[in-house]
Image (cartoon, rainbow, N blue to C red; front, top):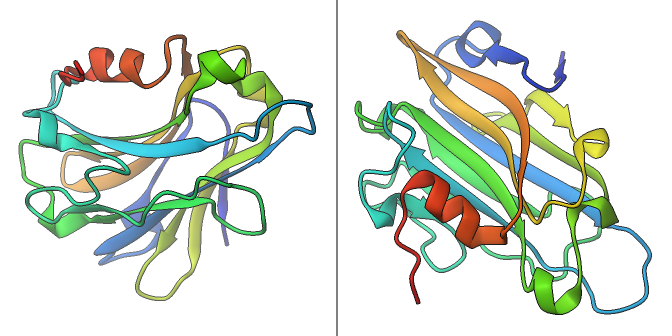
Length: 193
């Protein structure tokens, strides 16, 4: 049975699936029917220490850095068009490979070129994040964000985090203005061009 979460709630992944080793975090959304340019939403992951910051810039996993240097987190690639059925973008986390100093993996989504295109998350509908057991394809937990959307241009959808000796999944739904640069600044990534 899938655990459906509300904002701020969490679930122990290991209690749901004992011996869980690998998860796929699927993200999906629909762009509302608006005039103007198409939407391009991008999923990213930030590997964070206990202080909420990355160890190094390479702990930022996104469409231009698809694999963590230790192989623990992998981005399946950018889907610039979005839409369609199923997950728009996927991030895989190999739980046993995540270094001990990494306590959280923040799962985020940003709107590419939001200023030029005059777009924000208030124009996005049916957004969700879900965790799937990579071994058998079974969905473990899901967070539907549709009511959390506003004028922000970047959002932390969820976190996969370590608590004592178990991995948990938390529904976050926290928005930011300033797109990807705001998230990079928040997590300590030097994104200067």
